[in-house]
Image 1 (cartoon, rainbow, N blue to C red):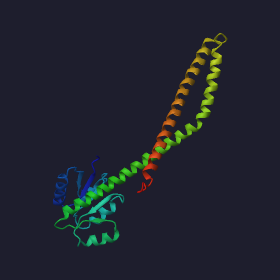
Image 2: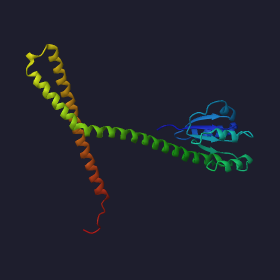
Image 3: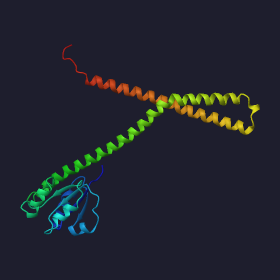
Image 4: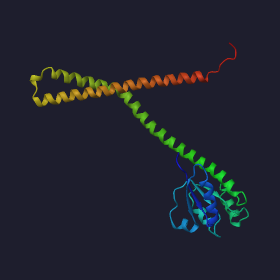
Amino acid sequence: MRHANVVILTDEAEFARLLTACWQAERQAPVITVLTSELWQQQEAPACDLVVVGPMREGKLTNVLRSLDPSTAVILCVPADSKEFGLLRSKYPRLVHVPLREDWAHTLMLVAGESLRRVEAMRLAKQAECLAAKNENHATLGRYMLEMKHSVNNALTSMLGNAELLLLEPGQLSSQSLAQIKTIHSMALRINEVMQRFSSLASEMQEAENASQAETQETGSPTSPYP
């Protein structure tokens, strides 16, 4: 399973130390990066799944939150009576806040766990969407090839027939022309084998789809409680 990336953003070393220790005690700890507000402003924000914003020096919190990517999950852990927090809460109504009180570490770990699970679920959903789009492109190509199968087979039949007629009278052809016709005949046979394989795959896929639909219908059909 992929390890989550967490950034602890705080100017209070004890906050970062305690939170890091709590995470490291977990069975599957995330990759943790600890940054102060100054380091955060001096470098590009690292790629992460969750940012935990802890206590900061006066006036730094607003600038830090303003610099965060709106799509990043953020947990703010500051005293609830902070003047700056009151302004931020009205500006960022979706901001997740864990009050900095006696049991803050336990509460934050629970909230962070849910946030990371949500981030992972969204990542998997996006990955599934990309895979579905890719499969749809493949399906479109497959449908086109099936639709063109008849035309390709007709063209191959003509190529093979004419090549075989020419090969029946090899004495009328130069050695170079004879070799070229044999090559055309051989390649046409190979293409024909590929087309036959496409036909077999189409039949197998159709049978599997029919069986799946029949199973779904049987499962979804209500059963009568009476014999």
